[in-house]
Image (cartoon, rainbow, N blue to C red; front, side):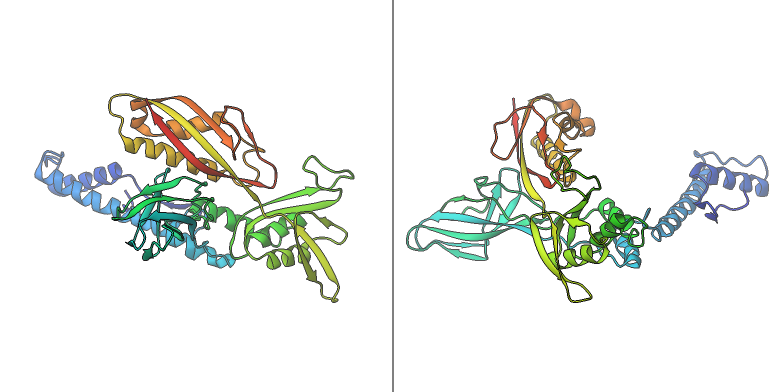
Length: 390
């Protein structure tokens, strides 16, 4: 071979495979010491050449990884966070969900660093010290120990993880306040791609690019009705509607006002007044998505090899799937049939169980197997995922 190292060309970076590197080293070795030299893997010389080939291959892999960190398409982790700064972006910082917990117990009981747990397995940390007052109960704000948009419906935080003499029960009367989600590499790549639409020829594309670039915006979706009649979403004729989660309402309205064309109406339930360059007040409307909780009940028939952590994995995957659907869901729905993919996607563990019953519901509706409709301005979020093993 001409070189065993990486090669950078107009098509990108490439490197020879490990087997090719080893074959080249073996050829070089026999050309020096003669064709009678024995260099197969069961010889000492062969093992040495294998080690050298592995070192070269590892070095090439590291070089390719470093090269790829300079592109938003292929970089990951800290590298991607650094690269998107070119577009004026930064990875969204997640926050922790919070919930008001009713603590019941013996008067005077002091709970130190108490932890409660919900039915989905997430833990919630009480304040460092909680004293149960006269009356035998107290409401405190607990913080989820897992960062991100952790959903906890009312009445599911009921398990005491850190038993304390005198602490009897815990419960959350209301749903938790959901934290800012953890932004994955895939989500950040989408934001980076959309942000390049700032100078787009399409007015709506420019607005979307500007919204994506606002600090704190986690999700967004744009709708346009360029017809002369109200559309199926209820948007008036010749109007646009932005659905935006997170970010400053004033900043969102300002960006819409700066980039929309004259005469184009804006539609939504959140209203902000923006003053234009001439000092004229302009009313801008948009939506903050309404969160819709999706609860799922899964009955599993366990076979040999099934363990409780498999159920936890299934629950997590279903939760991640629902939370990934975004504003408007999947074409206006959370489809029942799509739930089976995350339930069964457990690799070799899938042979240890079978999902016999799967039901879900929207909010407090009855559980069934009908597709759940999601409006254009709604955001489906996973609620309680219950796994029953038979």
